[in-house]
Amino acid sequence: MLVYQDLLTDDELLSDSFPYKEIQNGVLWEVEGKWVVMGAVDVDIGANPSAEGNGDDEGVDDQVVKVVDIVDTFRLQEQPAFDKKQFVTYMKRYIKLLTAKLDADKREEFKRNIEGATKFLLSKLSDLQFFVGESMHDDGTLVFAYYKDGATDPTFLYFAHGLKEVKC
Image 1 (tube, helix red, strand yellow):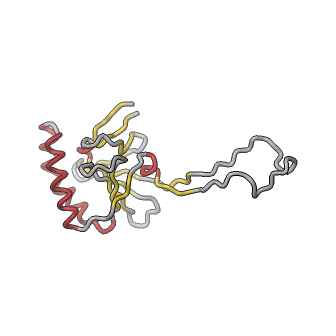
Image 2 (cartoon, helix red, strand yellow; image 1 turned 90 degrees about the vertical axis):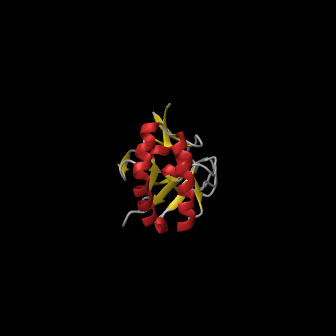
Image 3 (tube, helix red, strand yellow; image 1 turned 30 degrees about the vertical axis):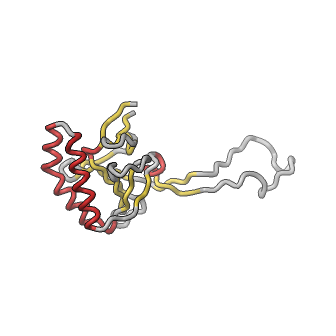
């Protein structure tokens, strides 16, 4: 299994169990998330509740909740939305921090294509949700989520150059 960690914070952000599609000249990865139900599980152990005096209203009060699989699996933390100025400020700092961590080939590829990816994200800014890894580190990679036209499940966007592959 492959896990993708944030190159800046080592937070786990994705794994190969969630297939991705490269967009924006490979700078962004697009990953489909899904709403899933977590919580109460009805386990039949073969006992006869009526004979044992257990009614339907007795037992554990489990709460069923719907979560997005990627957010839940990687413990992503939602952040407040950015306005255009805040987003541009974040991107400038992020590009500077990430560029310093990349090898020469990846650095050139990243520099060549990040402007297009930034413009793409800016065009969707009002529709984006912002997430960071579990550590909630200020300098970490942002993960973006939005709903495509008519979709009921979110689509996530990752900076491909901000991820490092770790074999588990």
